[in-house]
Amino acid sequence: MKQIVMAMGCLLFTGNAAAQSAGEYMAKVSDCAACHTAVGGQPMAGGKKFSTPVGDIYATNITPDKTSGIGDYTRQDFEKAVRQGIAKDGHPLYPAMPYPSYAKMTDKDIDDLYDYFMKEVPASNVKNPRNEIPWLLSARWPLHIWNWLFVDEAKAGEVKTGEVKTGETSAKKPDATLLARGAYLVEGPGHCGACHTPRGVTMQEKAYDGSSDLFLSGAMIDGWYAPSLRNLSMPPEELKDLLRMGRSQHGAISGPMSEVITQSTQYLTDGDLEAISSYLLSFNPKNVTPVSSDGAVRYSPTDGKTLYSMYCSTCHGDDGKGKDFTVPSLVNNSIITAKDPASLISIINQGAETPQTQGNISWKMPAYKDVMSKEEKDNLVNYVRGTWGNKTDK
Image 1 (cartoon, helix red, strand yellow):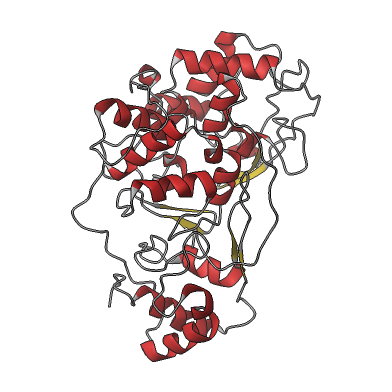
Image 2 (cartoon, rainbow, N blue to C red):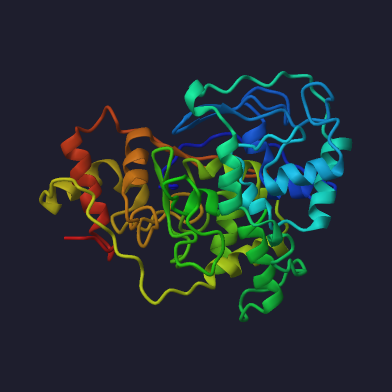
């Protein structure tokens, strides 16, 4: 439910996450591969398609190839593209690239990234596909106005990154250094707001830092509801487990976030996971965001309970608490209690699979799209959202 039940998958290779340069680490923190590496394609050679309201765009080749990639970019050219969204030839990039968040990255992290892309990423002469945007909407000059409105070049280094030692405990109140590092990672290179913050009419994120209640308050993306990260209710170690392995004692990840775990957060140091967890949990809301109506016809909870017993209880249990580190709990589950039940409905329809991470097996939940009728799925959704203390709109 970005979570769920699951049949055994395969073990992923094991590796040494520490044996990497500072630039490679920052590329993983920034999740560069998620956009710039197409399925089955060369690393960082682009070609991945993204559907936008104005048409389909393709991620570009950012290998050091001088013909198709960024091999002729100077450090200044690179910084301008990453922080300001301006390519070497002066044209503005589409804000599908989260440069409004990358604008906060420090000079050192930009330097490390530049060295990594120029010296460690294999050059690949893969041509950049043409974007599929209607001619009338393809002009880029309005993006200069967009950048003027929403990109703050002065953000660089604004959030102090702090220094967090591996093994620092969350049992004590997080200090300012820990929170500063977490804020930097979440608001800057980690660009968590790109999915978890609602967008305005010009597709800008409505907030870019924790000073606004809208930041990380939840948003729809690709048919999934990325839940609010401002009302998390779990021990810090569970949140760290979710980011490291894609599952914890009571929860699991699936949907678009699964790719983030696989390509990015599983490689973070324990200190950085500690910082992110401390920052996200520091919002400490007084009240859990209430669940809004899902728009479905309300049926008798008994119907939903029968369906739950038939299809779900074997793994999730009659009490909805699941199995530690295997099947996520449905009690106080952010996907269940979200404002919009789209992710829950998607999981019931399509099934789910936890991420493959180093040294951990993947687990699957079957799809029920062709098993249950729409009425039965409505009953099940309403039952799960209204049971075990989960808050729902009646």
